[in-house]
Each structure stands twice: as C-alpha cells, then as structure tokens.
Length: 238
Image (tube, rainbow, N blue to C red; front, top):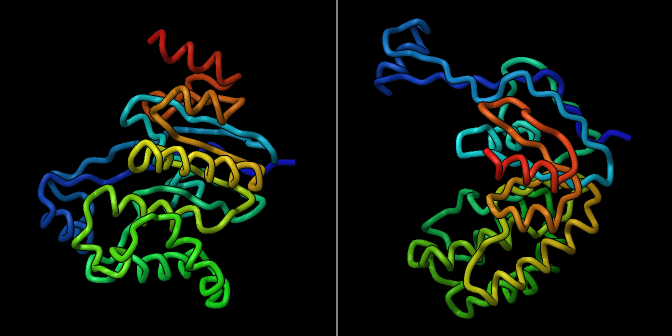
C-alpha cells in the first residue's frame, strides 16, 4: 500500500534582481525586467510504500528540502501532483519561534500548531519541558536564549507528536553530545511508531542507520533510486 506518491512534479521559484521590483511585478507585470525562474524540482516521480524508510541524498541545492516541504503540503507543486495516505508531518529544527514569548509558551503554541488539544498539551507539558533540560530558563523570553537553547525548544516541539508519515529534515544533530544521544533515542521511538519515513540528512551514517532505501537528487531530478548502501556509494563516487 502506498503512503506517498509523487507524480511528475515540478517546483519553480520566481527570483527577482530587485525585491521591490519583484513585488511590483507580481502586482502589475509578471514579466518585469530582472525576473527569472529557478526550477528547483524537475519531473520527480517517487512512490513510497507504508513501512518504508527512505533517505534523500544530494548536494546543497539539489532540491532535497524543497521536495520534503512539498510532500508535507507546505509548498505547492508548480506541475504534477503529490498524493498521501495520511497527513505527513515535517520534523525540522528550523521551525519559527516567537522571540518575545517564553520557552514554555513557544512549546505550548507549537503543540497547538501540531493539532494537539489543550488537554493533551496540559497533560504532556511537564514531560516536554523536562526533556529540554533548560530549568528555570524555560520561563525566560526566547530572545535571551543561546542558539543551542533555542534548538532544544525547537526539537521538543518537532517531536511532540507522532504521525503515520514522518518527514525529517536535518533534525537529528541538536545540542551537545548528551542531548544529541537523547534526541536520537527519541527519533528512533517516533520512527518505530510512525511506520513510514522520508529523511534528509547530510550525515551518511545517520541515513544508513535509519533507512533501507535511498534516492539521489541531482539538479532537482532523481538520479538514482535503490538500496541505501548503493545510493550512498554512488554519491561518494561523484
């Protein structure tokens, strides 16, 4: 049974030499001078079955994160279609946080954004706060946090719920060594419960550990699709 089906998908981005001209062009004339189109994803077709763990590999700019964003529904396809058997959840430590709000307030808001009810959040908030290991700092505004402290809050929000289709975009290397070990264990629990995984990670060791299948992207196109060890070897040979 298919969990995700990406069918002949293109994703284009409009780029303007002048941002102000870009805004004006959108309102008045889409063919204004300085406009160009970047084809981030080109004719990609992928089927992922329930229970599969797939690692997406490629150089920076090859379209990995763009593809995951499109599968999650956060980014529309320019052409083609993406079908899913259940709502995918994109786990990324790059989530937007509110600087003026406290760490605990950001966790609550993040959980609500994941679709958790107030009673579910109230039941789990102590557990989530304890996981961050931030102590009393959890009540301070996020603007006062170091980048490592912010990453802990982002990770806790990203892993608060377990979907049936899990998309991971570079969400494993968070915090110091001890926290990374704890984070990895949490990721493993979620993967076991989720069933279907599509992962982007620059660590080939992480991909080989979590995934059985690999997809190599080059210039927004699928260059190879096969066993993760074969795809990693092909990527290393380039």
